[in-house]
Image (cartoon, rainbow, N blue to C red):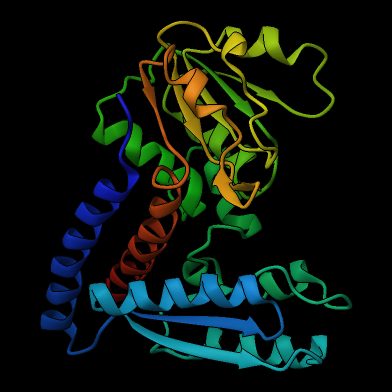
Length: 280
């Protein structure tokens, strides 16, 4: 079965419309997301536009905060601090990557954990590692939501995550571990990637290498989640050789239309949750 991320994301957005309407009814204001963009990166411009459009669709107020491409680290820190202190702002997102000369970790550290809707702060990652409540990175959270809505069991299953980034791989492994899966994390130094992948009941590919996962690396009936987003011959493709692996997998996400739409949907969900928590 092909997992339809676009359809699930549409369901989530419909649910968020109801949540934001209730929030406005109770507070007289909309949940608010501030998006900080240092200008100059065309890809970042597209990502930010998608996020701002998503906010409008579900009734979230957005602040489009633009900084010039030659902004200093001190100026960027000051901007984020002002947003952190603004009582009307529920979530802050700093679009990465930042230009050379600006330490992204320093900037992100200025976002209070309760406004960190990307789930990148040390506090939120630490909460995830300890199995405590916190904000979770949007892409791995979207993967878990897909598994949940397709009623794919994780308890007792062998899960293999290919990729160990702080944004996807590590939080993905922790989420699966917290969901009672037995988890293996693979990476560029893994000795026998094929052997590890063949053990997986649930295989998550998140390395950014086109068609790395081939059919001979996937066991019959496995659930295959493709987080990769690559271009090959001008076309979008994932980390999984979809056409070949689809024949062996019980469930598989396509690229595009699988995990991608879930990332923005879960960001919007995180903003609503942050607003609701701050109101309590």
